[in-house]
Length: 348
Image (cartoon, rainbow, N blue to C red; front, side, top):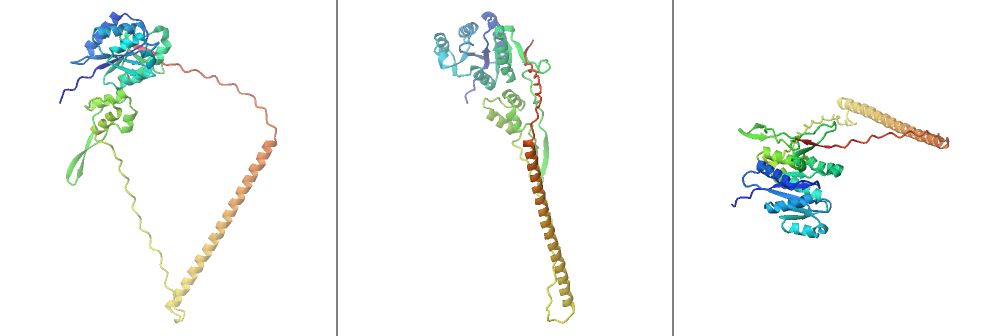
């Protein structure tokens, strides 16, 4: 089988900040020397749309072309028709047509086996940059400020303290425990899955890759494929055991009454049995009549109570409608405090 080519490290570029292209090139080379192994390479991704493609990006595209670094573009039909953009697209490895360039960029970086976002921070658009870049950090993407020496960016928590590192995950890999179950003299290992399918579906793409890596699985671009492989590696789906059916208690045998005696027989054992049957029948019939009478009386009492309650509600409603409506004093509107937005912090 032919050897599969190595995956490129996807480097997204975002922002309209100004930067010396020689300094940017040096930082990119330092990153490549530290991260690239073997035959791996990087591929730059630029948003080529009006208002987001700066002069610095234009110079970076020229740098990538001169150094034979592959790059891709995210644009739309209107912007792609611009003259300068047409020249840039001619040498691009791939061009994406998307109405929302930042969302497309986030999707590409999340699905890539290895990815990082370089930000050209524009201080004149600080609030806008905070909102846009914060979404990439929330998605678990390694985000660094290119205009500040590739400093890693993170989000503050509610107390103003820096949050955990982006690559940190709430799911720490743990060894899967095994138990042996004897079946007809044989012992078969029964594995307990560490993560359920529901847990895996709620994870971000980066967390799924960490789980796959801990189980010795290669990263996949398709989310469902990765989930299926993780479940298989853990031993498959967990089928809940059916609760044992409760034992059926045997019914108590009903009392069998003695057969009625022949009236023409002489008084004796049969006559005594007949009299006992008659007394039992009369007692049970009397209990049935009394029970039926109590049921009817109880039902009539309930109906009477319901009618009285409905009549009381009707009288209260009429009295309420006839009474003058009191003039309530207006309550002062509560002052709502605006939530403090989270801010990006820089980690050296």
